[in-house]
Length: 552
Image (cartoon, rainbow, N blue to C red; front, top):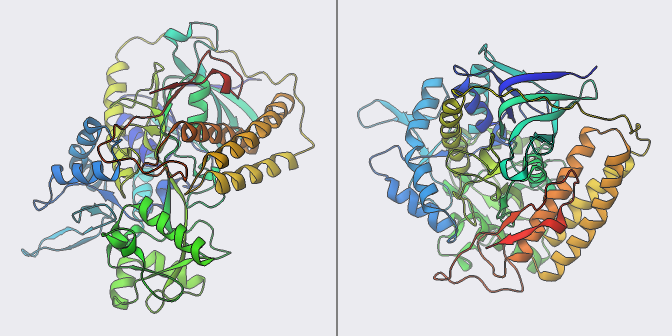
């Protein structure tokens, strides 16, 4: 028997964006949050650095805005940057009222105040944090509040398959399309269930799992971007994939990030011979924006044939290191590195998806009733390169603005729409799961090799040819066999890989996080344009390549 659920708002994703939105809506609506795993395994939970916000008289909105615009390499939307930064202090205050245990220090008056750290690209200390595990403190606090609210329903181990729109149901034309729910796979039962919702919010995070090496958890498979594209949403600037310069280099250290704050507190990047090198690439040295630092490390590793470089904070006192970076200190000890006495071996890894689904300041997409907030969205805040710790800020600010828009729209009467149940009458169980695992591995390897930190036209063309072959196999598999969580994620990753490559192929310059051997760096006075992809005629097919239009 088909199972269906009805809620005012369906939120897909349980990170900072999804949880804070749910809490802001809960007194006004029935809210469901679906997550892929039974535990908090989204990117928020693993965020170490903190949340950037102007919270002292020594800092200013103008300074934070200027730093963000500079890091964004000419592609930030000034109105979005101003909007986000000016709403930062109220969101920090909201989190404090919820009880997030931010680090504090004594003020001259003896009163405890927020301790602020500094990260790459920031001209001031403005990063509010909870030691070096800000994401965990934030996630735990938001989750504890949300799970006790009677209007919020958690559905763990559920993975969205596709969005349901009025156009796909034959109830409207693409021009007046509306999102009315989602088909969702219950991983425990193996069956697809139907979710009806007046408003649906994608808070699914980024797509860095499309790369072989990433700081992200396994769930960062671009699900929201892929589903939104198939539904008819515009996406933008997906060529800008941020590679974090410093992930722990160890064969058993899966995706462990060494926070930007280590460099902010004086950490030095060293070559294997112990010499510093960042001053040769940027006058800001280790505090240059992440794209510059990541390319510098990549260049030196390739020049020397080195497996890694090193990050050294051992010149600071052991007490300082342990108090500021307890998580990093403990984790490195597990792998035999005492960061109070020796450097940490590090390599770059895919970290943040700066592009995504195009939204306005309320998180609304070009499909009525569908919102996107957090890393899945392209708001215009990050431009061609995200400045450190602006991401959690974006999650909070846009959750607040989206909640206000949704609450206002919930005042209008609900239009009851009948949704056809999921049809799997013509599929069978697969006896070839190895196809999925093999394709998953192949995709991530060639994306790392051809669409990584440094690109070229030939590399992008090679990647696209392989993506097209993989998509053909995935389409055939998806059509004939009962879906699994792995197949859903692979299908989404392959589509997002295609969109990343198409955006990269269209950008005929090196700018921010997109660096091509075939094009010179963009001049400071050059006109910066977003790369926007728009689906053509709506289709249930996975691959809409032939319907892409490039809008400049």
